[in-house]
Image 1: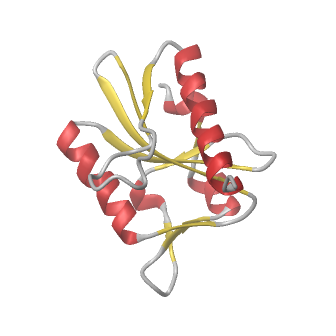
Image 2: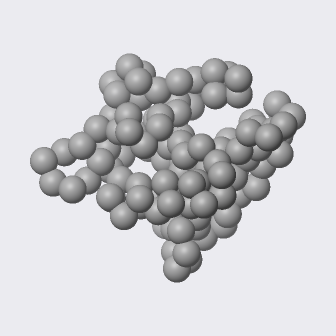
Length: 130
């Protein structure tokens, strides 16, 4: 039986991939990025010397991110020479993008992106392309 949250995540990753291509950016999706033993983002995109490593999240409510996942994105982006970003699309909302330092942090070791945080600190897709 197909995991519906995993299927939704893959679907939103592909949606964002197409958005980049439609705006003349080169983009690849790293299928299975969350299960391979090496750090890698969900999407790697670039245009004219600008590279972005993007970890994609989607859902209805607040999304939590483990410190390990955050550090792996930063590590990959730094080694690749890319900017690290988290892309989030909550139901019935447009994509928003946050740098790792903009994520919220709970009392434990997890980071998070809530709808409120995404709207307050995140930038739109159009602004990301600048």
